[in-house]
View 1 (cartoon, rainbow, N blue to C red):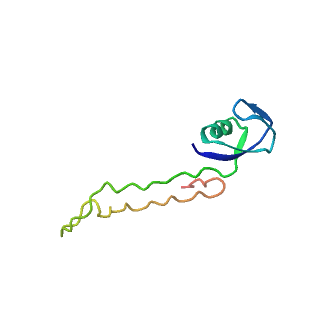
View 2: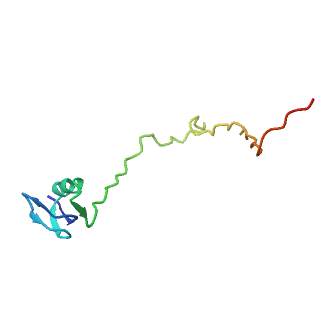
View 3: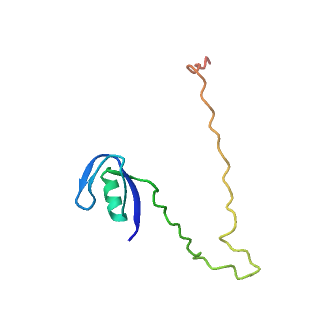
Length: 96
């Protein structure tokens, strides 16, 4: 059971917390805090931090072979085509 500090944004009444006035600080359990924040009644004082987990690589390590891997070879880039910008105004008609 994790307790979280919140501050009330508006006056409200809840069966678990009782009567709460605006700007009142509360220390309540996390599921209730998330529920009240979802309704827009409270703001978190110290927002809960998302836990970042690093997962092990799923690709096998190199076995040290002399042959270069086909997956690590760079792909040949296609030549870029540059579009010519339009001029201002109308195009001239050819007088030929």
